[in-house]
Figure (cartoon, rainbow over the protein chains, first blue to last red):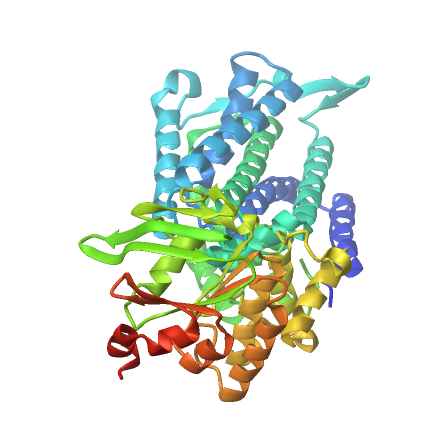
Length: 320
Length: 238
């Protein structure tokens, strides 16, 4: 009767990381790069899933947290010539602070109002990237110099231009994110997140400080999103305001919905599916977004809880 | 005195739902709060539990002023509230429902509460739902969902358990089971019962407060309430 972590669930997650590790040895160059990019954005979607999938809070402003990490890492590396590790730590720290501050304000609303408030905050962040164009170069963006992409750690020189290094670092952070979220959702805090999603007023009347728990969820979610943004800036050497647009908030939502909201692996699966759906469709037609849209409608009809969410409901209830 | 309310009022715009209510509940008693529809019963107990704030007046619990404390703090102090309209986690298992409630349980009667699982099973056993633990809460019959609601309150190991219309929608046999359950838990907790079913009230309560149009109409033992002419006129229809 007791609900506890299933060993099958643990090994499933280990298996996915091992599979991704082995994949790099067989992937052609183009797919190697694409997979790296997808994994970075999957971290973003997995962070988003903590708030949306597990806590039930629909944010339309997560591009702001991604952009916070992206710009903090990019601007400190480009203008202040900080090293990769310093820029990355600064980006994650600023991301955590920004998400906590925005959360403390936005979480005073709920439902549609929360959606709109987060979207408005993100719009302010986007416009700021255009307003301070002297530093950001707005839409054109900044390209980080090659000198800003190498560093030494315990005597080893690491160059982020090397695709193998990029893939390995990304996989390392993806595995770390998987581990954090896997542990989180099985912890008492994780169960409280689900309780809030299912019935917030009941949860409050069981002694839970629901505001504090939601703020914790948003801070974790925003910090992971900022981490993803920082990785993107440092690994791909580009920082531009297009990453702060609402399109990126919607992308995180789509990846999560497609793979399965409220499942640890769903956003990762959704990210791969969405990327390759568009990639394959664009090989055949310029109307690739139309094709992607039709496929998405079919998927939602047959997998209303996302691919992994539906599989969990029907066949594998042990999937966290 | 476990809980006292003094001069408590609540207004919603121009509507005064509760007017200057003084109310006491003693440690260990079963106290019923009755009154016709719209009398302000649920509004009043919502102020006691912290779901809504009082427009004026003060509430003390175990000698501490809790008037301005949020609901979750009051729950942690020992005030549990079960909703009039069943409020459970329909998509989670029965076990999970009680497990979530068990996190902030008190430290009393800890012999069987060394572990979360032991505590949850003990609570489910008390309400007769032990064999339903694996089922999704939404799959339970309505009567069992009401029992689950009560078990979530019990899981908090409260000093004061507020039951808002607990027998609403239950069959006669389920009401009988409910009365047996309340008699079984009365040694552990003080109970404030908001109830329309007068036979349940008369069978369980030691003291009764009658609310009418937001004000206290009468307070006393079941016999005193039955003999009160104002109550008979306003509520019992005699």
